[in-house]
Length: 145
Image 1: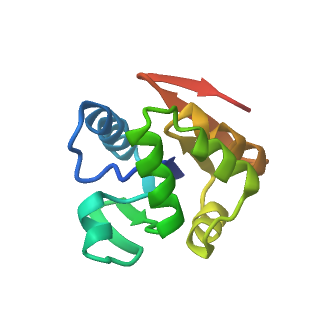
Image 2: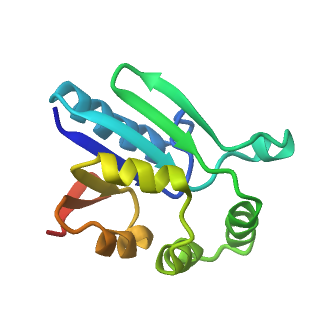
């Protein structure tokens, strides 16, 4: 069974926008093809930050596990970027700096394929030697190996 680490800048599940539905359909397709998928989200949802929810792992469906990183600094970057209508360059900066959690390191070691959900996360793929590396962008997979 292929082990796929799917990294997103945003919490994909539950899917509440068209882009998140598209990403979840790709993930469900991977599971249907016999993969186990772990979804790592760099930021959560506003209501979770307001409720002071901690970073957490959760079961989405059989063979799909999610983890939402809820660091306050990332939430502030996400919120400012959205309110100022800037591109999500904060994702690229964060990815280049590489202040990743132990959970991401653990899941990275577990995986044999890494998919990033956004071109802003491309720099992460430099850390993934020896694995199949893909960018999922607008229903296209870009092979980065």
